[in-house]
Image (cartoon, rainbow, N blue to C red; front, side, top):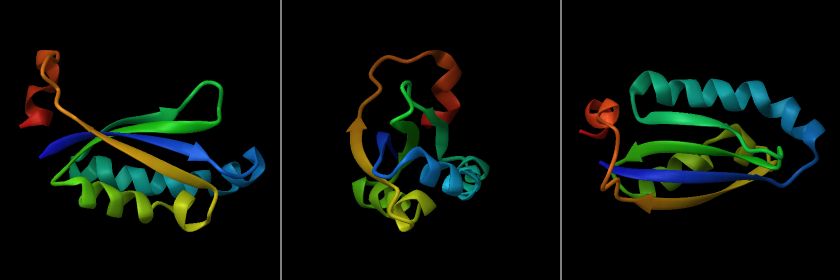
Length: 97
């Protein structure tokens, strides 16, 4: 597994984001249940969000992003960055294995 940071950038007015927010959060909830998402939330100012998760590869992370209701409904787009957590708090040991 590899670790990814996903920057979610809103491409529509905040009203459209709010219309799709419940579906987006429900979608993310599945990732938490399956154990591959670590954290997510809106950025400040609220022009997008951030998601941290682990995936087999960049293609898997991209597929996850494309299935997000935000992307499906053309209100946001993702930029995905893979990184190696060389240093981390031990609280993350089980997540990173």
